[in-house]
Picture 1 (tube, rainbow, N blue to C red):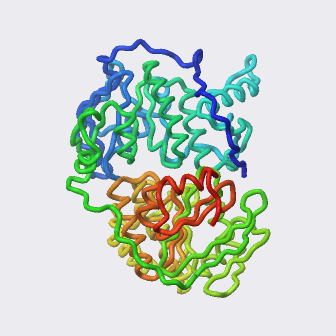
Picture 2 (cartoon, rainbow, N blue to C red):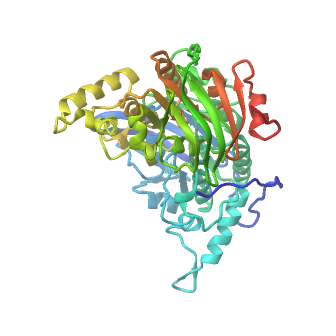
Picture 3 (cartoon, helix red, strand yellow):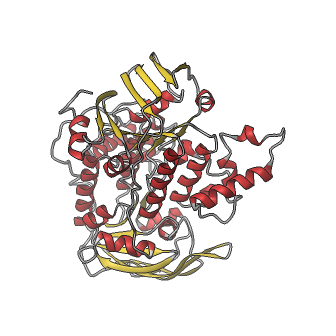
Length: 523
């Protein structure tokens, strides 16, 4: 896998000559929707949305999972056509029948789930469908590579233009998606949860680029579950709930607390559950584990009923460690000890047998099969338990309905394909799939990526209930609030090594960052 190197910190490089500048008129309405409604099989998911989005503004959209955010932007970018209503773009009524029509209008989208082709290089993905030619027929690969290098330089990332997508981390793939959208010189740029896998430095870089795009007259529709980001970067915010438009406000006049309240329709009480006290007995011990070129001398232990956090910057090796523990990555040296017994884990099948479950950070890439229905996903890992010898579909359905009720999964039925569920509900299905294998050790990687504040609360209480039932958890998270709010201890990693292990009394955001950046080191 390609590893990000450490970069110097030069001033952000801007595309002075290549960014198109549009005539600025703050009163000009670029997008207007009147009565936009969308129904699926008679179920209304978007109800008479009337909104005006001005040229050169950053317009936020928030709401719980299933509120209608993704449906609304998919109508704008041509993925869906509205059941009723009209879209007016630049003063003219338009029918955006498909994504090609949207692109011709100047509408570009950075999707929440990656739309990249793994077998192609970075520059080939960025210019797919809009290749630069040398003469009439030959591809101008050098020009596309140079342009890609320039775009990624603006995002302050050193991903090689000729790197294969399959070799990149999730955060690097997100940077490629951003570069791909910016390369289109869009008039309307839709960003759907672009920061969920980015570090704070990467987010700051993206925000500076967004401000430059805004100054050039580009309109940005920005969807995020991070209310602090909405408050910081957006000019106005539209709040949706259950398909209805609740309000549109200036971000200068609405607080984060009021945003959250309008999203869920009620006051949110304490989002993190109280911490439990783990047993002193280790259930998992890792001793001097190494994976060539990625991990070096990793040693830690996990106690019975503990939530052990793993923190670090992008490229620290946290996900790679999880993949080594479940047999995806071959271990060169070191030991894994489970309940006092040395364990050999050469594949994910071995991990399941050893009662280890893993929730991947890449939900649609490796977590679930989106074209499978809900029940088919829930029993993916544990299918053998339902074969007698043929699949007992009645038992599979009954178990899935229990998870739907327990996790509050919003789905029309157990037979609904997962691709039709919101991101938060897809994540709950992935959690149910991992839990159905009856694990004793649960490795959870970025569990709240791309889900709303209320769904986050549900996930936090789910993890709390796991450890109360005796399951031990490893929590990998880039959200400092989650590490501090949930974990009993935190292991901090940097460049494939553990730089510090902090107890609850030592855990502060500043202390964790000292170890993550190399300013401090030592167990």
